[in-house]
Amino acid sequence: MFKVYRKKTIISCFLMLCFLPISIFGRTAEFERQHSFRAGDTDSRVSARNTATQEAQTLLLRELGVLVESRQSLKTTNEKEDFSEEVQIYTLGRVNTEVLRETWDGETFSATFRMVVDTAALFIHLENVVNIRQQARTDSLALVRRGQADSIALVRQAQADSISLIHRARADSISLEQQIRARQAGLASNINEPKTTTATNRQIQGNRHFVFSLRPELVAGTSVMGAGGTVELGVIGANGFYFSTELNGGGVYYGGALNFGKCLNRDGLLKNAVGVSAGYHNTLLFVNFIKENETLKSQTGTNIGIVGIFWKLMFGEEKNIDITNRILFGWKKNPGFYNSENEKIVFEEGINTTWTIGIGYTLTRKRK
Image (cartoon, rainbow, N blue to C red):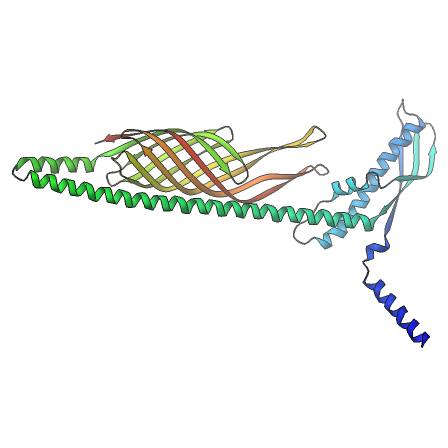
């Protein structure tokens, strides 16, 4: 009975060991390399030994990096990760380079160097780095989607406001038509005056309005904010068709566009223009990669808007106060990470949403 119980205990312990992670037992890797350093005129044996040790350690870390890259390439499937800098950071204070055999002839220091690394702990550290980077990408994607949802909400609100203004303009038009009919009924005894009124109405309907707008703008994109100014020239047709061209510029913002849409209540004190804006708008993102108060690399990112909608409110008869909103959609390419080992920059790319608001002066003068 005791033998059976002992046999079951041994089998249970064996199964428990099988299910333990391999990293709990610990794994190490040894790297050896022969290296020589030719001393200068001011070098001693000690300084030559220190310099040779530093150079050998750099070469041994490269060999460790090759091992890490071959191992991680099998575990990372989405994109190739660069762990050279992470390996160097991890080995600081944890890995020592040992001098096994050394010779010194007064000019050249030669030795065999060995470095022992706990690869199990190193791989656990790198897996944690991968998880952190993947979580950062997930959070960035969630932020972009949240920005898109906010932009869509703004567009829907602008559409709702535009519809409300359209209904109000229709009501004003009906009221004006009723007043005109009442006036025509009261002047029915005069034959010539209605003809003059009809001719005048045709002349008013045939007029076009010249549009000139000058305004500063605030720019808010998915990844960057800025400010600039806009000059706009255009025309409002007899049927309310709105068309204009504009140029934008500022410290981090430049571009141009064509705007076309519909202007409601063209001759009123409150004019409302809604339409489509298409062109090229670019908001720049300047990034400096700094390490230990030293600028390693500078790079400029681009946040481009191509097409969107605009909504313009003009308060006044001819000289107007102008409030212009615009939402543009496009793409972005901004620097995200800098690898000092291979001097390469990893860019973050995706969908870009740009919102601009400008308040300024707009002239709407009648033209025959």
